[in-house]
Length: 404
Image 1 (cartoon, rainbow, N blue to C red):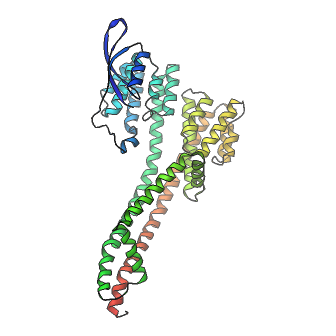
Image 2 (image 1 turned 90 degrees about the vertical axis):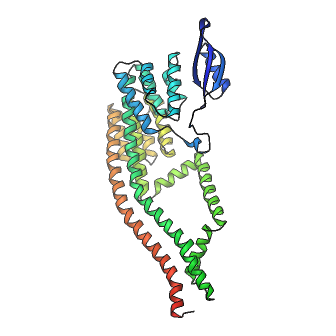
Image 3 (image 1 turned 60 degrees about the vertical axis):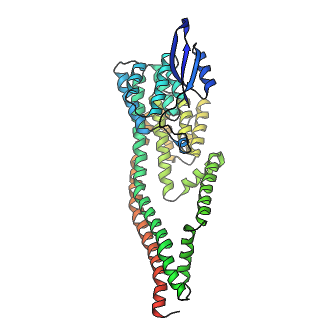
């Protein structure tokens, strides 16, 4: 949201200056009046380097920056430093102008008496629902420093899992990119030159060479814009579809049914569920509220529906294991472990154990998939390049041998 600099009259006729974050000027003035301040002038702050174009709408808070901030907040608060003083110290260390403005506004609003949790809600790009919920518990219980440490540990753990998956895909994607680049270069430069020379002799190109020549023509004519339009339109259409409840459900069901990647995704979804719920319960959040938060961050509509049903059962006085088992995402053995943990009152520890076990299994699966995928991609690349080489040399051999 935009940030506004204001000049206002405080209680007792004292003139004060500061800044607020709001959707527009009217909202900024209304926010000041709620604080008991009469605004005189409110002007939007233009931040240097802050994007306003198309790509800016997709920007999110830097994860590493947020983890560092959270870890430092935990250290400062646990050292006995007040919340507003801790924020002031960290504001001086933040280099990102957008994040710094957010922290300044949060600090200023906390000073005026607003709840720290309520101020974080206005900056969803940085502080998600898990973050805000755990801060709320820490603010109520007076253990904000410990909860910040828990949040930092949770975020670091989640980033490690994500980075492992991303790292495992880097090498295959590089190989595929080089393969596509080689195909485009050969079909747009080498084969057309050969085709021109063959055409000058009055001979026809072999069928396979002609097909590759037609493929190359797409990238050297106006047809490439049609291809780009089709790809962009397809991606846009899929995104629109996946935003709907039915579309998201069909997408997640298809992903989970994939023979190789389905089990990996399922393990990751269940691991995230167990880890997130364990962390929220450990921070002191009530079970029903924890399940509400988890339902919004599972990243899988099927799992989200199951967690929502589990929350309804909890509110009705029943167990949570049954809807999780019926979802088909959680294996019966894991659902049984959840039931055992629920009955014994050790659900938090059981969920933590499940998460750690699934993470280790996920590491093994990722390593095996990486080992298996790399040679397959290399073989496919060799076949594709070989076929193009054959299509390139075939007309030359036919001409040289006199097979007109």
